[in-house]
Image (cartoon, rainbow, N blue to C red; front, side):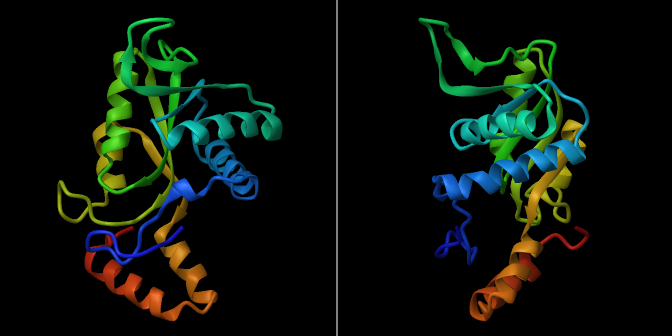
Length: 196
């Protein structure tokens, strides 16, 4: 899931590689556990197009099979449809519902902010956000806060991560990937949030 240099970062997290049963199975459990353990009651999981769609479906199923909690899931279309069922969202209705947004990784937070706008237009209420990986990097708005911290303040919701960058770096270090870890630590020293 980590590959070559993207922009100035020495790593790129590609959740698109999570595309088989063996990789999706633990992912579904991790999302479900994080949601069930760390977020308030909710009605609908929302997966922003495109990577968030399978995450929401898998988490919805796993929350039911593991915890006996029945919730819906929904996602947005990139372009509104004017025929058939129409609209810009698909799946469970959002109106009057408590919604949790799922995302893969939050760099700028643009996908999640867009999801918040979509849910607000549909008269839903976001009660939490769960991301797969928190890069723990300084956001672009206030200088010393992470994108996650900025989003929590802006939207007034909890943002939780299945995995934090520091956890991933520690795991890679245990696997003996010292060159990669050195580059990642240097990057985090420069761009990582200091009060995470």
